[in-house]
Image (cartoon, rainbow, N blue to C red; front, side, top):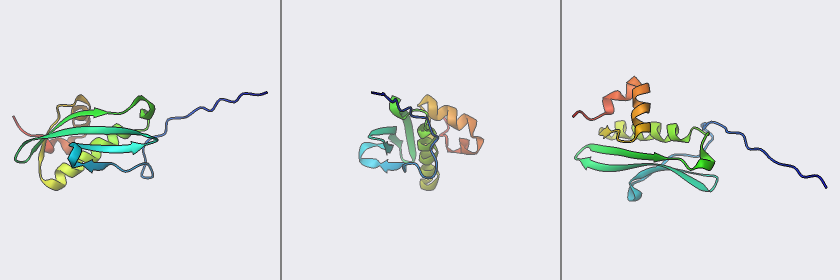
Length: 109
């Protein structure tokens, strides 16, 4: 009897990977993928200001580029809604720091 072991290679998120969805009732952006959920949690803290508080990608989904995809989508939403963000989440802050074209979305103060 021969036993085979399958290995799963990490693949980056692409246009064919699952869609990021805004779930306003849960105050988050989410990707449901392979039976798990990756999220960016937010809280409205002002008339036109949202605190991007936390990103979480379950261990089994890491390595697919999902956190970056979620943050990019959330920042696009903020731009479309003409709102500012507070990047409390260290991942969101690092993403914005690496993408100067997104820095105008950060609330002053």
